[in-house]
Length: 217
Picture 1 (cartoon, rainbow, N blue to C red):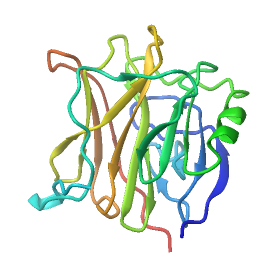
Picture 2 (tube, rainbow, N blue to C red; picture 1 turned 180 degrees about the horizontal axis):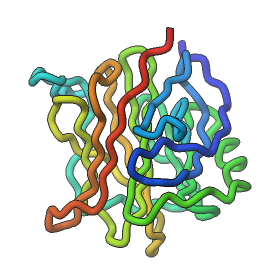
Picture 3 (cartoon, rainbow, N blue to C red; picture 1 turned 30 degrees about the vertical axis):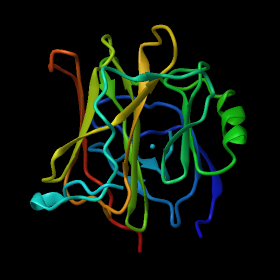
Picture 4 (tube, helix red, strand yellow; picture 1 turned 135 degrees about the horizontal axis):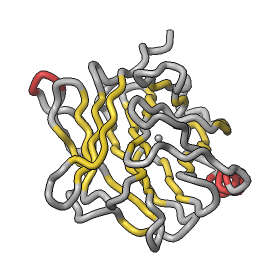
């Protein structure tokens, strides 16, 4: 049974984003997982804010739930909990900048605390990201801030295939949104994690690459 504890933080790892986005999460990971970006000072920890088999690195199918390709993010109401896999819920807040929560437990409490956070904007036309690891279960989450709303966001993990992430945004034109990818059963990633946002024509809007941190001992 997972041990759940409340973690409050305002740092999301960004290799290419050049800033910090605010997220608040209820941690369902034991021990807390860490994701390193190229700039190790920007470390995203314990999913702060982040079933069918897919492909493993080196061409073997990698366990994980691949979101169906969609013409852009799903529009959700402010504060509404959205199931993103492994029992986690994600919610987007209108307060602050790129402000969202990821919670395994105590979702309402997490939202209330996050509402008081102003948040730090990530750089225009960039992506933030990180991951939470619990045994062989991995959950990737992050935010995008782009002039054009992405038609799709993908992840490539090590030498594996490009997989589709789910996306969320608030109504109107907030200029940002979030993404998630449930890699349950995949194990801790080996090699670089690459996140790419595309427009409807397939042109790249923004990209992120980071190296996962070593497993905690």
